Length: 244
Ligand code: PEP
Image (cartoon, rainbow, N blue to C red; front, side, top):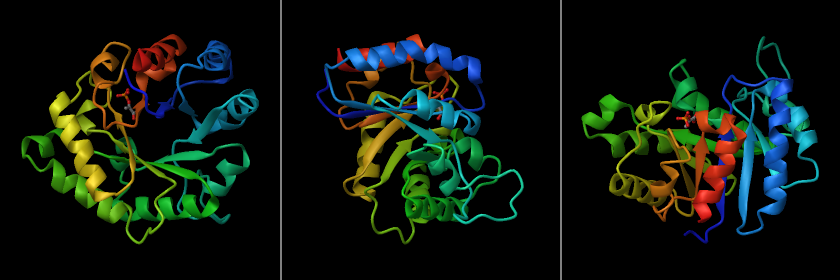
């Protein structure tokens, strides 16, 4: 059983609409009642739902985050984009940056670095995602890949206190596969030696079954949960089981 302050980040990806919000009533009731341990639950819905969710969570300690933002904190001619100021303005406190699904669409470390700087400057907290592909894992270059993502992604960012790191092996996202406990422990430790004092979350196929083993890895500071977070019962189960 863990006694640690843990983060649970629900990444809804491109799912959810206004009707979905009804399913969150049970999460609100759960968070109000579950006084057992201190934890932070952060919902990262699609941008269309940031404001409705912030309003819904107004009197409760659940935070809202965005799933990405533009690197320019100023307004400008960037069709289809929103910036850190805009998402903060509608209630977001966090933003996920460097997610592998966006890296796969062409986001590189330099762009991610400028997004992180812009978000921090605006006063948002950042959930910075890093992780190796299956090919890189097989080539046994995980550490090299992570070190590179960290060095470039956090380049010239001195104050890292508003940055949470999410270690998300690309091969584990949405695949049902998770790393071996011993590998995960070592990788999280490696990340913590690279970024002193960082809180490091694990993400990749976390569900209400594998949480039973994942919660025993005691250097993990929380979980980034994609698919399973779209079902309120599953998410509640994950949180409960983390503390049992
Ligand atoms: C994610 O979207 O960051 C993620 C970890 O997804 P899943 O839990 O579905 O693997």
